[in-house]
Length: 284
Ligand code: SAM
Image (cartoon, rainbow, N blue to C red; front, side):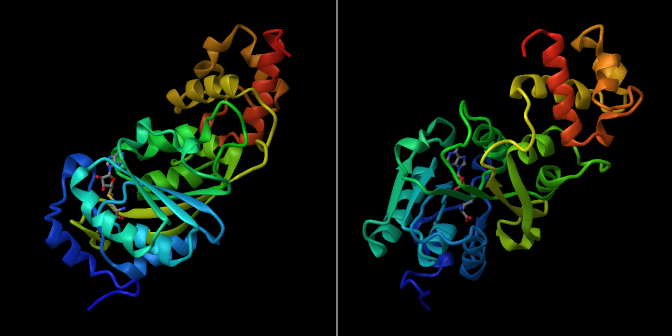
């Protein structure tokens, strides 16, 4: 039976091109085209937008993105074995799919896509967090993308959307939520993938803010949150001691109890502390 796009079912594609999943490349494929269409829809209205997809593999999500109306999809895949299968999809959607054989970590997306740009991916777990951090820390804000719709291991997804007071709350939550809004839009059990991974997964939808939620120097904010969560069980007056001799007064000035722990402190207060530490250094 052929799918809505006239292309063969993904199991047939995998058999025809002998795409045995390779663990080293983080290959856990989505073979249910209803599910990949659902992920594509979670990215919002893609008509009139370019989409960057990382790791298309046999192309299930790619087909979802094209069927859901993306203007153009640029898909970066490291595994050359997948290229013939992806070429078949490109032929079924003339002029709308560009496949790049390469490493997503070395890819200059802005040079290949036109605004508005959305990033959608069932990411290889070994590079997912690194790509997310890069997309959230460009030299200038706003970044080249409007939204990110990304599959993560469930625990990573929970760290991204975590609120103060939870054990998942930490640097990743602060980094994402400072510059973007994030929510989990779909949770998937291991059996949704072929082969099934050991972990559960979740799709996170992240939309960029026009500017960070509270003013702060990103370098200072990063230094503070790295130190605070690097020793998350310690009181802040102790974990932040390395920032300078005045840290206890600076914490108080930011309305933070020096005996509090990082996990209890809101993004707003971390930003207030970053501004006070900057002033103390004579920078602002
Ligand atoms: N998108 C497909 C799907 O949903 O079925 C495949 C997802 S699989 C989890 C991850 C894909 O990323 C694989 O096809 C793998 O070859 C590819 N990949 C792994 N590391 C990569 C990298 N550094 N750059 C680009 N692609 C990569």
